[in-house]
Image 1 (tube, rainbow, N blue to C red):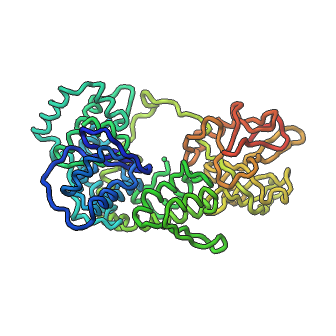
Image 2: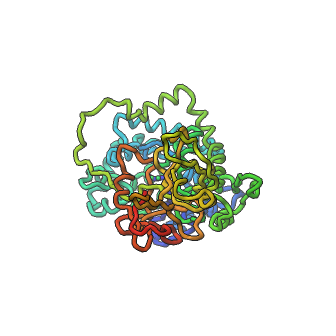
Image 3: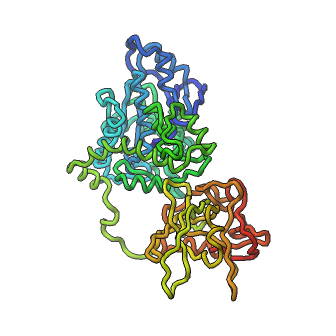
Length: 536
């Protein structure tokens, strides 16, 4: 069960309401007794709280009918598989909305589902992981001010192993076809070439949950809509990550200047920070305009699209806000008992018994594609000479803005080919996910990509981004723009070297990989004059 986008459905109706992209909610046939809702909020106000920021609502008319009579009973389930990360604040913030609307909320720790989903949680770790999930989710809710006494927590195995439930599973399996079960779980259960039978059981079990939990609505991922109508990017930030790890991961998060369509940093602000705080503060130096408070998300998005807000300032501000949410969780898990629980539920793979050497059966060769390279537009903001020894080639240290909070230091030998004054404030192309290397005692944090022609008189020219480009914009090979780059290229795997073998400058002075152009959103990457040259 995923923490991202969600939905609510009432059997017997096909009417759907779509709102802003985010989450959704699904009411089923009403269960439980009716009761007075009190004076405030009104049914209309409750409906607004329940449905705001949802991508989809299934069965809205039924939802309205229930709210006129009594409080809505809703549940959210999460399979206790991998460690919860900061994206789990998305459903937590929505659960806060449900509680404000007076809903009776049940949180289901779907431990049995976790095992059945391609055995993502080993049977021997189920109880430990469920305990970890319960403690960490309670800590998350406390960190955003949600009173736990208004919530009900339950484990799937508390009722899913009963005689009655098992009999209902058999009954359901006698009326549901294999085709329908596979279709219902296609986007929830991990799809493999030879699927396990457990993957076909999963949708039916979830369809039974709302009946056994005696609720009106399921709140879950949009990827679970088929289940609802049939009856969870390498820079993930863990909830227990240290502040320095949060900074490192945010620094590497893709956040291209002006790009609001594929921007995870903006999405986190939109779906977590704004619903929780009703505002967001951009923290920045006075020389760049000072701090600015946004009370409407679309105004922030508009300023980012217009490049009024810099990606570095956006990331810094998210880092501060996120750490305020994580601090109480870190503090709670600093106790010896919870430390022990975390290590037992998720054992360190490096401390496991070594397996037999040799390639794993059915292992697939690693895909070497250009989207694994984190190549960005950079701007040289300062050029400094590095100490030169009598046997060393001339090198310069450059400070390059690549759209992050702080400029990167990149060491190269361009001083032999390009005058310093031509490099100052120049737009360049930088490979950003190489492992930092010591060069002349200086940490070089990237590679300046250049065209070159070898020979008695070697010629070198920096690659040029299209006019109007901004620092931090992603450089991609046409057709590979949607892939996510590696967090850091491992030197032993030689991913860059294997791809570089097919880098070339065309006769039109365009940078290419296998005769396909390197580009930004504004056009192709090129060089000044080195037709047919190499790229390094």
